[in-house]
Amino acid sequence: MEAFLSRQCEEEGITDGLHEFFCWPEDDEAAYIESVFEEMQDLFRPWLLYNWEFDEENEDITELFGTSISQAYLKENENKLSRDEKQLIKAISHKPYCFWEVVDVTPGREMDIKNIITGQKITIVERTMTTQIKPKSIIFARAVMVDGIGMLIGAGSILIPYRLKPALIELRKEICGDQLLATDQDLAEWDLELRQWYLDIYRHMHTPPALSNTDGDPLEAHKLIYTIDDPEAVFSKLAPLCSVESEEDLRSVALTDDDKKVLEADFPWTKQGNKKIQEWDNTILGEIRISQDSLSVKVNSAERAKKIQKEIKKRLGQLAKFKMDVIENLEDMLALRTNEQSDTQEKSMSNEELMKIPEARQLLEQTIFRHWEHWADIPVPALGNKTPRNAVKSEAGREAVEALLYDAVNSNPEPVMKEMNEKGVRLVCKELGLKLFQ
Image 1: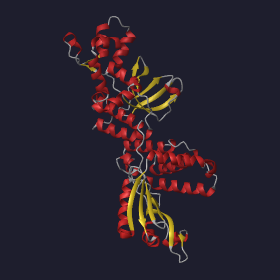
Image 2: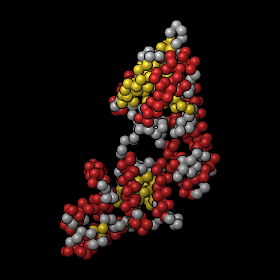
Image 3: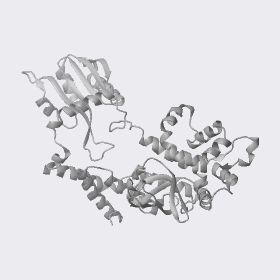
């Protein structure tokens, strides 16, 4: 069939097919497409043969307009092909790719999968993949039935995280409209959008996460340096920036002279609470260091650097003269911290050892319990900013909440964390009437 394509279609036409498969990318994405093309072969080649509609402008082959390569090949070779070959081509032609949830697996033999968009269930006879895949995995693939045998003809190379199922449920609602579930015809009409979803997920999973602090600001290490003449006055005016300790407590650990005036001091710049992590009572924004003739503040973002500069100007005025803002290379900073951690690794406790300390384990359990105790009534972005309690009122919402809870328990490789999260999730399931563990 590929040889047939090469004979019928010039290279430029196949390039058009490649561009359509990647959803008509911008010119500046050529390098990215080249870098992932090899890993996309198991999706692209079947799509090109069975889904792409041939529209090459060639007077000698106008009869191929608007048909797939497989249909054109079948028409030309119908008398040469066996019954099974013809059945296979007809079953695959224009069959859309979609997102499938793995329901059950018999390693080395078969797996039961369910189409997240259409609800179709099918048992796939497969050897290699079934030794590597587990239930609650999501794949992007084309599943077909031929003479009662289910098979995958084209499958993506990544397992899609189960936590993305709520987003796919929202996509299902968009495709279905007023219908309960979509049809293959609906999927064919959404072919490009479905493929774009997979390509976006693939890119996201292969793109290093953008590092940010707990305020959501991009990480960028800044060290602000000022010259000062009066460390005691500077200390008195900046001490209130530490919300976790009083000025007296900070003074008690500072270096002072005989008159108890501060000569040197180190303390954190903090604020109450944390907008990302509700269980935190406070957030460390930076590190303040005062010496006899200088003041320095270390922060991890440009936004915090601007904020502390305003605070210092407002509180100190002429008491501090700005000298420089040293922006550290983030990769070097992370490498240095990694090396420091390696040097002290033998002296540090492992998580396993730490969890043997009753007080440490109890503190962690309390923190995790508080999270799950209130989770049902906190708006969740993955649920369209609905609370889980409101989301489970619909069948689709219940399905989405169960996916998030399953992922919360099973995505953490730490046995202790998994155990503690499972206790919290069981509490949520009982409160919301879910049967996740039954």
